[in-house]
Image (cartoon, rainbow, N blue to C red; front, side, top):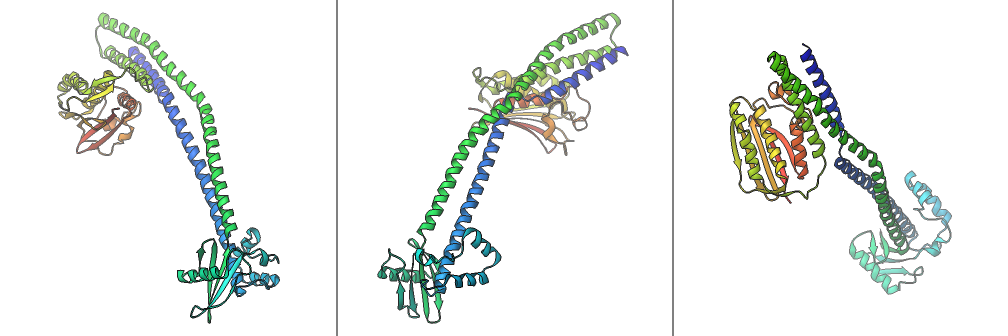
Length: 454
């Protein structure tokens, strides 16, 4: 009984310790990706806010400018095309009667109405032409504009009538047409100054957005780099701790294994010392796998990569596990295209295939079939390992790549291992800018890896 308690205590301590340590580990590569994502989100958010605010300012300015131009045109039309003798106080009283609350607010705050200043009649550049119903000119007023002759005023007025719109622009002037019982009045106002102000405002907004974008980019880059430094140091310490602790734990495991084997030689084998020996072997493999994950999470140097015939590597991994499948009364089928080359480390590909095939053998239905496929299309290399798994409906396959996750009830019973083989496979795939996913259909579970060649 003491042997069983000792075995159980060791197992609980190791599993709890490593599950916490490796699950919390964030490697430097992941932290850098997080930094880039944070910087991108912050930059895009800032730019979005700047553009929205700038656009709103510009559009509101454009709206108020057009509102003011329409107010001036209406004012001139109401005075029959000539404001030289209009009493401003009378106009103000008329506007107060006709304006709603919003228009009055715009008039008071943004000056979208007609100013009651007597200078209005002198500073407004306009001209007007009145027509009969037969489009004959009754009179024309060009006293308040210097850039337009009477002949040009007539031509502008005819062009406005031909356009068929009661309000529009022609050249640098904005016009309004008001029809009467005996004809029509066409009024033109020089809006060059207002449009110049709007254009200048747009240039200012774009300039501020550009300067803000540069400043934000520099600020986010500096701050994000400073923010992730503690996380990088913490990740390095965690990785170093896991590696060192893994090496240190090999010694007591070796001692436990030696003592158990000695006990079996002296006292004979029983269910307790056999179980202890099995758990010791599993714990040794667990430590090796955890160290491998800690190292595999780093990007690694690609200088050691060579052109590898991964068709041969996958076939070799399948052949090495074929006796295990035969022993479990399971059939293995291979569909591996020849001559597929990937710049990689041969050991990585062989290990990836072995992990997936071993997992398929372990969880395949009794007397089931394991299928291994390898193909290439363009720069994508596709490795698929599938096995019969009739009870696979409704299983959360996204969690299969979480470290230490093992859906016991879904896998069909107690299996050896600690659920990190697929996590190692995912780490290997990521080294080659690839992806891995699990899916189920027609009674088979499939693990699909996409590796990208250069």
